[in-house]
Image (cartoon, rainbow, N blue to C red; front, top):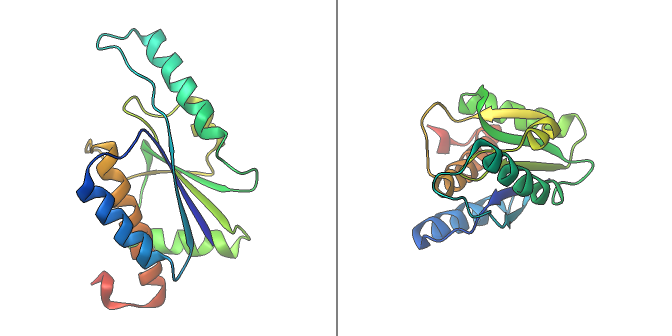
Length: 159
């Protein structure tokens, strides 16, 4: 399985880089993980709705350029479905059973994702109603992907 995690903006904090590197290493026995950062757009402090829409569209275009035609795409969006870890593990297993070998996760920028990116998604997923920093969300997501594989293996890691 190939897993891509497409994110908007550069990861700056070393402790997050270290955590992501650790889970990427752990995941290597199950999948190839590709972390892809697309540039974010500078957002004016008091941007209008039209400016925000334009920014999301530009970031969305960059994201879509990184999605393969045959990828199963999961976007992280507040309106997405919340899943317990066990159900997420079942979902990841079902994706492979359905014949997908490339799974792409997308974390948008501070304004969220463009409607075009959300429309491309096969599945919209939410980690809850809390607002988390997008950079921290990368670590949370990759840990949950790792956890899903460990659940599938019957590992005590999940307990």
